[in-house]
Image (cartoon, rainbow over all chains, first blue to last red; front, side, top):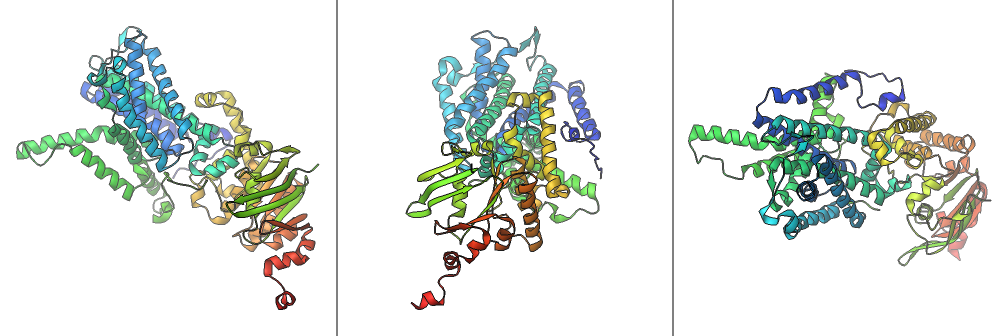
Length: 366
Length: 259
C-alpha cells in the first residue's frame, strides 16, 4: 500500500493525489492519443462513440451522481445540442468552432429553464417530470419540422476547422481526436468543479437538503446551476453524436436514449468520473460483443440460431439488474474494492464496505 | 442590545399550538438553554430561528433586525449556524469536506472561475482549508479527517456536526441537543467545548438540552417550556427549583393529587 505524505494544503488541491497516479493518467492519455496509429477506422469510430457516450455520461453524472437529482430527460438535451449545432451550421453557415460551444450553451439554457419549475421536486417526482420532458422533446422535434426536418431527419454537415475536414468517414482519426479533446476538457472542468465550493454545494444538496440550507446553500440556485452544467455538457455530446450519426431525426433521441444514459452511469458507478467512462465502455462495446457472439454462433450452428433480435436490450436489462442487486456502486465501486483488497493484502476485511448506500434517495423530509 | 430577540412568537401546526407567545432575548456572549419535556416546542423555536417555519405571529430579530423576511439559506450569512437533533451530515463526503461545505457562506469565487480553477480559487481554497483545520484542531478530529461520515460512530458524527457549524464562523450558535446519545465522558467534552466556544471564540450559544447536568454546568440562563408556553426564565438553579417546572416534568406533587 502506498502511503501519501502530504506536506501542504496544495497536495489536496491538485488534480492527482500523487505523482504515480498522475503518471498512470498521462500514460492513459498517451495511449488514447496514439490509438489511431494502431487501430483501423472501424474501431476508431467505435472509440469515438465511446467517448461521446462518456461525455454525455459525465453530464448526467454531475446531476445524478453529484447533485443527486435523477433525470430521465437527458435525451432531450442531447437533441437540443445536436439540432442547435446542425441548424447553426446549415442555416446560418456558422463554423463548427462557433456552433459547437453554442449548442452546449443552448442545452444549458434549456436545462436551467427546466430547473425553474422543478426546483421543488426531488427523487422519483423529479424523475417523472424529466421523463415528461423526454417525451415532449420527441414530439417537439416533429412539430418544429421546418427547422429540424421532422420525421425525415436532418443531415449533419462535415466538420471543418480551419479548412481541415473532420468527417467521421473521411478522417476517422481526426474525428476521434476531436472527441478526445472535448472529453479531456470536460474531465478537467468536472475535476475543477469537484475540488471547488461549487462541487461541495452539489454534494450538500444531494446528501441533505435541510442542512445544505442551514449552511447557506441556496437550493433553487444550486439545482439550476447543476441542471445547466449537466445539460450543457450533455448538449455537447449530442452535437458530437449528430456528427457521428451523420443523419438523425426524432427517433434518434427517444426516451430509450435517456434510459440508456441513466443505466450507463449506474452500471459505471454513480458519483465518480470514472463511472461515466466505464459505463460508456459497456454501452459501446456490449452490442459489438453480442454481434461477435452472434456471428460465432451463426458460423457454428448455422443461421437462425439461438440469438433473437433485441437481445442487446435484454442483455442491458439483465446487467443492470445484476449490478443493482450485487454491486450498487457500479463497476468503479467494484474496482475500488478489488484495489483495496490488493493494497491491504492480506488485511482486507469483508465488512469494510458494508456501510455504503445508494445515492438516489427518493424522498426526504424537508 | 440583545443578539437574538423573540417577541411574542406563536406557531401552530394545524390545530396544535407548538409555540405560544414565546418572548425572550439572548444576550451577546452568553449560553442560553431551552429546556422542557418532549413536545414543549424547543425544536420548533430552533426551526423558527432557522426560518424553516414561519411564525403565525410575533417577530424574531437578530442584531435588532427582523429576520422574518429571510430565506433559510440567508440565515447563516447573518451569522447564525445550527446543528440538528438527528444528525444531518453529508454522509457520502469526508469529515474535511463536511467542514469545508460549512465555509459556503465565505465563498467569494463564482462558478466560472471555479470550473477554470483560476489562481484566485486556489488561494481561497487554502484559506477555507486553514479555517477547517482550525476547527479540526479545536475538536480533536485529526484521526477522522479523511473518513467518510457514513462509516463514523455516532459520537464522532455529533462532534463533526458541531465542527461544521463552527466552520461557518457564526455569531450565534444553535445547538439542538448537543449531548443526546453521548456517553458521560463525551458529554463532559461537549461541556468544555461549549465553554471554549463562548470564551475563546466569543460565540453566543443557544441550546436545547435534556441533560440537566450539562445545562447546569454551562448555561448562564435557562428558559423552561411546557406545551409551547414559557414557564420561567432564570439561572439554572432558579429554573430547577421552580414549582411550575417540577410540575411540568413530574406532574403534581402528592398535595396536588389529593386535592
